[in-house]
Length: 464
Ligand code: COI
Image (cartoon, rainbow, N blue to C red; front, side, top):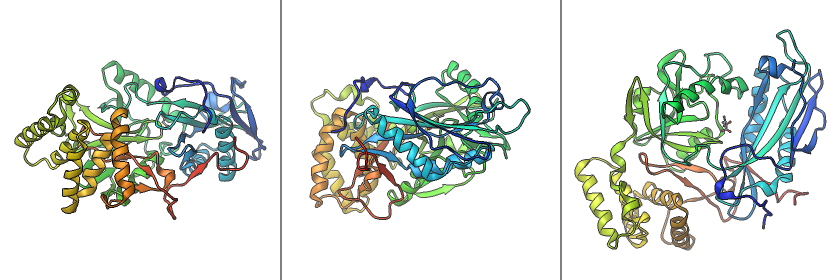
């Protein structure tokens, strides 16, 4: 069993939390990094004339360590961050960080703070590498020395209400970055420029800002703290990487998984704002936000609910859980939804989900079996799983039930189990505003040729 700090894991938010140690290394004027070492977590000294304080010469990364279902500590695709940090460094005129060097530093910090990794399913240990110009520079010029630090914090959900559909405003007053600027680098300045827009948006009752492209305001760019996706039918669309969009690790993972595992058609191209208004789903992806659905987008004083009809059968789920004849009620909602919107292809899926919520697993099993015979299984099955995962209590009961079935292998012919390193990955397979995502499960054995690599902290030599 992995040891744990005495922390109230259920109340974790996305915030700073002092841990045991942090990594520090410095580079000299030739751009060579010293050996670096762990130091106790705490404040540091910095010159008031440092490049970072005066000219914003700084970049950062964001990644997470998780406690896996197999009681292991794993990092999610750290190699992607290892590559991206050097791209960001180069754009900000700072010395690159060799990938091995980066990985070693990350592992040192993660191992030393392993007891701050929240228990399975309770969040993650956010790992924040930062690189900045340390040396004093009064004239506008690259600093002659740099610092590379990594600190960590156990975190819960990024948005204060957890994973609930976001209410976004598409900004007509601000752009996030300029074309040919530093939008595709994880530069600190890209985030300071969003502080005022987000503050104003929150004061007006929105959760976040959706930025439009500076060179064409009909197109969407990203959400500042996250990338944006749209699902319409079987097409999953996200803005192409124009140079002003951050190439998110979660963005990349969702694209790969949606194509390989869900069979969706993937499109990275220009995304019209107005297309979002009629989408089946819109959601944001990022290390911090994970995968968060978007429920409503306001633009030019008009609000557009995303796929509002899809939640019809689920409207009063919370109120009906205590009723006796649960299946009848689920059917009633199903029929009502069908009447109102006969062409809504998601209603079948919603009825499954409805029954999962009502813990009517036999019904779901039968339905899935029928669907399987009709060869339309995967979407529905995954949907029912996604619902199981939404509510921990239901999840535990439902998961045990389905898990036994999955293990027996005779019932489902759908490959849901994938490389263990992806076990914490959330998939976008929701419908509308209510259904969220799937946590993929661990494979019984590692699958060769994974698209996603994880590093097992406690399997490596020298771990606790
Ligand atoms: C992340 O998702 O890790 C980010 O870097 C976004 C951050 C601004 C919270």
